[in-house]
Image (cartoon, rainbow, N blue to C red; front, side, top):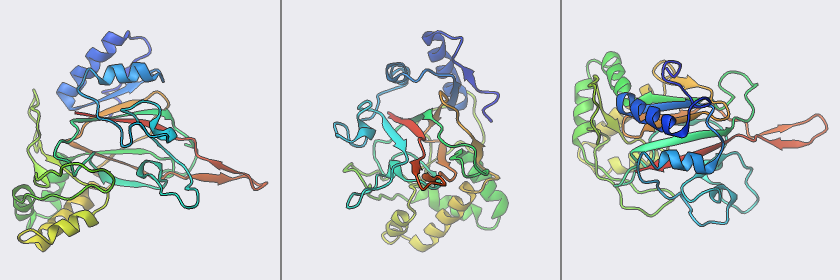
Length: 285
């Protein structure tokens, strides 16, 4: 998917990179960069051309993961010391397909991720933290193909039922948009099934929300079908990011996730090392 879209930043001045990113996002609602410098100021300066940067989840915190910049969340592996709570951004393992701040009334328009350190990528396929992306419109098309008898009713419920669910980690006004809705920005070139979705990582939040809406059980069945398709490798795009790779996605139209990340390795002598994988993640409104 990205081979035809990749922007090589190495030979380009900063102004040309910005122009190429703007053009790619306008046409494809995503951009993929290679060989971007691992410099906070350059990264933030590029993203500020796309909108307002959201504060990270704990701006001002003394935690190392938040100190890089007030808008950058460092997604990394970190064993949990006894008595501490693990950050969502420090968990190992796989991440199911989801959208950024799916709960929030003011949702990010874009999500940017810069691979600062790819960590261990010499494992079996699916154990290297490979990145995943899916276009919600492709999920909808595949839903029609796989479930022809229920797809129309599924879509009616998913687009016609307003719902809200609280955040698990921040205090923010919740959205009341449907699960599937019309994207907030137009495309210069129309495409089929140009839809948006707001999907949290934890489906139990939607299951609880279903208890308070009409036809909630049937609605949640439609959600489960949608999610199952979204997490099917045949529908997703998988890619392995190198250091200096940046992906910027339309947070309405695309979901993202990752394959398994191994948190630690134990050497023959018993020494334990932590996977150095680190991504600079930024939400843009």
